[in-house]
Image (cartoon, rainbow, N blue to C red; front, top):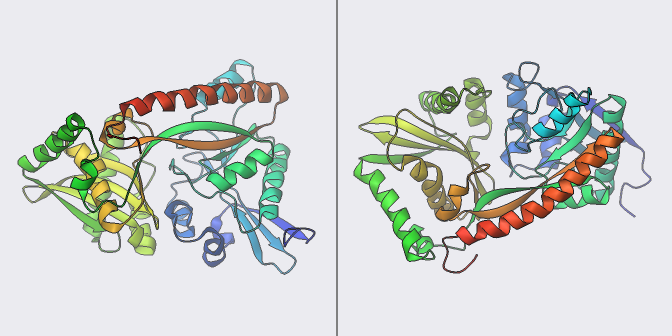
Length: 383
């Protein structure tokens, strides 16, 4: 029997994470994964990066025992769109619309705007986790949400969702693994000759353009450097006609509260910053999140977003580099197909059958796609 099984549990839903508090939240979430830390999620709320304007309404869950001790928590949001989720369900929303039904609002468990695998059911007890899943579905049903979705679940939470008969959905990203390389050249020696020469040529071209890279952690960055990084972040959305939801205030705050986990990789040319890759790190993983540049330089994106990250992982003994969602071009640079998971509950019984069938068929196709993509691997021997 689990420690808490049979114990009286009280569940609360919160429209602000501040109602739970940093010490209690981080006691369950830990400090390693930056995207699930209280400081990160609270900064999103404080600086209005989530809320009505962007269709992310906080609705976090807390579970307490009779002594009011926090036993479980879950970062929940009610969504009025599918923006910033990276588990794409636009076709589901379209099907609902064609049927004259509302797909929104829906409920999700995620770190907003970040396609990063991590803990979602924050508890040290599997019984508490199971109760959370069951009660979240009940409240989603009561509030007439079209569905409840756990995005980018880690292995433990994925397995628990499977045991709760939720439908799993398979995705694919491209991750780099550190096999105790002593330096970048040793890593590159594992490539076949043609692919190795291509990477060397790309790195050489950056050097020949008189570009050098400065790596600055958030707790070391000046306000001006943080402002510059944010402008680069905005520039990418300006070019792609997107929405830069993260404000400069948000960047300034997380650099102040958790700056040791923020890593800026500035590219400088003629004493001026021309580009920046914004990454975050856990105890063992580097996460590439955002990128922006003032002007185009040959191979600068590859150097700043990929090769510098690999260098950083090797030098700091990080085991994994996740450079973000999508992008098959990453494979030939050492990032291999890696499976990601999400879990789903759909309220409408007819659509539930259709969505679950879609996910099952998609799983077969995704497994096959991952195997096919491995043929693009640059390594002499598969990792």
